Length: 449
Image 1 (cartoon, helix red, strand yellow):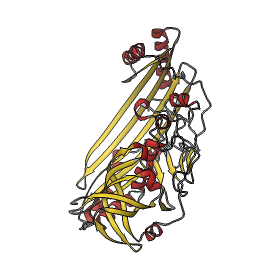
Image 2 (tube, helix red, strand yellow):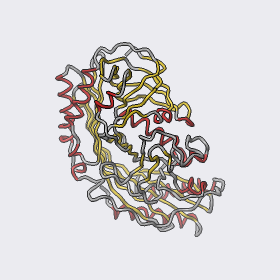
Image 3 (cartoon, one colour):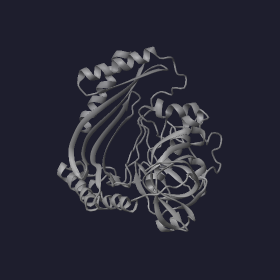
Image 4 (cartoon, one colour):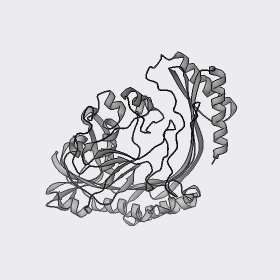
């Protein structure tokens, strides 16, 4: 780790350079992200690579009145910091004025993270040998099934500083650990994935059993004609649905551009009453974030309450355009991504996995989706494939594996037909979600595998 003192000194140096080079009226913002990351890869039931990386990203924005320019660099040496400030200034001088630019935010009190949340010493101290032990559990389980595993075990420590010329200064640190694998046989595959802040909490046995067990049960899948089927989505597939709905529909830029299904409809029930969706950056079971890329404090935000869309996410620019306040969702690269919710959580229901399956007369149990792409943002219509074992459900029972299918489906419409929500949530790609059962999911094609 670089440490807060060194990162603060670098941030102060950037701000001084910007004021000196841009003149008395120049404003500036600097975001420093330092990361120590390590990865242990395995394939064909053998570890084949250990990778370690130490990096620091410096992102600078300079404002000359309403003209704003940005630049990025890797490194904290004086030459790199001089260079990134000059590039940001050059970009600002070449920009047109943006009348909506609200300036950089003044300092605000940051929320306290729950005790012990977000940072785990076991993750920071994890060794290649420790990651190899986790990977070995997966490899041995796959070998015992006569199958092949591939995947990775990773750990990282992140430090982040945001500072600006208006007085904002914020520092935080966090850890992330993850173990994921695909276990493959001749005719089937299975997937397993666990993540969180604490390496010591990674349950390699459950990852191995989930992936290998799914691949074993998925052997020799049979054809199934495309059509409309009720489905049970495991958390990996449910995450895809929730992320697309939030990214394409529940954010301020999409509302302003009238590409959101929620535009002009806040306060209306647009999804099933079973859907309560929050963005909770302070959830101790998730990956904690106390502030966004502008240094604005992050706090829990209810986006959907029992199907009623209550809020969308904003950064300062989109909030200024909408005549409201930032919700703390600025991202680096906001001009491309917009103010995105990165800590989604679907409120669990009361049903076990077996009870969710029991709600389906004839449908599909889906492990996860793959290669999903938006087709129509306004309705959040997405196309993609099933992957890593899909099963037919008949009269409330899983009966046999089927070959992968292509779907083209409005995720908004699907979340309007929720048949049930599971009671056990899992963190997947930053989203905490249980399994969900949905009615009337449209499959448009099939695969030979």
